[in-house]
Image 1 (tube, rainbow over the protein chains, first blue to last red):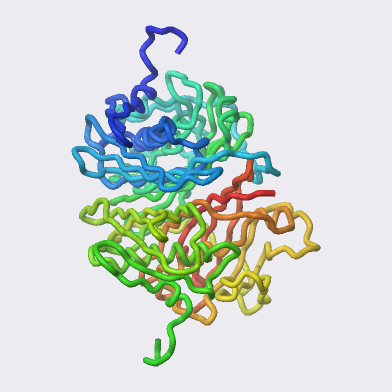
Image 2: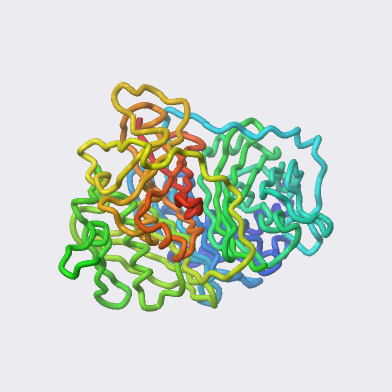
Length: 273
Length: 273
C-alpha cells in the first residue's frame, strides 16, 4: 500500500485472517473470488498458506503445500486451525483444517523451511512464448467472478467456446498476473497455481461439472526470487496425463518472465461428463 | 498366499497393521525394509494407505495420497491414527498421523472414492524401452536393505558408481517389481512410487544426504487394472524440474507393461551437498 487510506487489493482482502484464540484463525469469503460453487480454490489455498505464514510459531518460508477440497466452502465466515505437528531444526510440518460451523470443508498439510546455499540447477527449459504484450487478453465467461481478478493471455489452449469442438491435447500455456496488478508473493503464487480451467473442458470442447480434489504446490523459488517478479506476468503451462473414470490429473509449472522456475504444481480433479 | 503355512511376503509383513482402539492402528518396522535412517519411505506410505483401506468406515478405493515425512521412523512399533474428516456421496477425505511414543513422525492425507464410467483417455505415450527380460538387473549397494526387495532393471539413469561423474539430466527409467514377486495392489504400487533413488545422486554422480519431505501419489488405475498387472514388471520414469537451495522436486509416472498409466507421483526432496 502506498497510501494509508487506499482499500486493500481484493486478493489481500480475500486472504485477510484474524487470529481468535489458540490456533484458530478467522477469515471470510469475498464475492470477488467466487467460483461456480464456493470460492476459487486458489484463494482458499492461499488463505491456508497465509494462516501458517502469520502463525507466531512459523519457521522459514513455504516449501510445499497440499490442499484437499473435501466440500464447497459456503459464502461467509470460515475458521482455520493450524497446528505444527513437528518442528525440526530447518523445517516444520503443519496440519490445517478449514471449517464452517464446525464442519470440515478443506484440509491441508504444509512444509515450511529454511533454505541454504547448495548446488542448484533448473533442468527444464522455459517454454518458448511471445512476450505477454504480443498475446491478446481473453475474458472468461462473466459468471466466473474470480477470473476477473486475473489478466490471462493464452499462448495455447485458450478457454473453449461453443464452436471449439474436441482438442487433441490438454496443454494450456498462458501469461497471467493479478489485476489490478499486485507484487508477487507466496500466497499470490499459490493462487496462481490453480488458475488453469479444468483440462477436460479443453479436450472435450465444452464445460461440465469438474472440481479440484487435491492440489499440491512445490515452491522452488525463495522469497527474494518471488519478490523480483514484481507485478510482471508469469508464464504457466499445464497438462493432463490421464483422464479416467471420473478423475484426471493436472501437472503445471509456473515460470517468471526472467526464466526462474517459481513453482511446480499438481492436482487431481473430479469430473462428470 | 497359495499355501496356508507359508510365511507372508516381506511386504505384507511390513504393512501388517493391528487395530487397537477407536481409530488407532499399530504396526512395526521390518529390517527387510530399512533405509539409511529409518524405513524406506515407500513402505511407510503403503502402511498409511493400508490403514485407510482396512478402516471399517472406508469408502471406495484410493484416488490420491500425500505423505509428509516429518522425522525418521525409529525401528520398532508405531501407531497410526486415521480419521475421516469428511465423507461425501462418492468420496472421502482422510487425515492420518504416524506416531511413536506419542511423537509425530509422519502425517498424511488421502482421498478415497468411487469411480464411475466416463470418457477416458491417456494423453501421454509410454516411454519406449526394451522388454524387462532384455535389460540387466542392477544391484543396489549392500547397505540399502529395502532395495533387495525390488528387482530393478534400469533402462536409463542407473545408480551412479564412484566413477560416474556428473550426468546432464536427472531422468531414470526402470523396469521394477517386488522380489520375491507379488501381485500388484494399491499398497505395492504406492511403495513403488518411491522406488527412485534421489535424483541429485544421478546429476552429481555421487551420494549425499537426501530424503523425501513430501510424497504425492495420484492413482489413475482402478483395482481391476492394477490386479491385471499380476506379478509383472512395471515401468517407472522419474525426473527433476529444479534443484534449488537444498530442495528439489521429482515427478514420475508408473506404467503397466500393457501400456496402462497406473499412477503419477510427485515428491519434494531435501538434500545437503
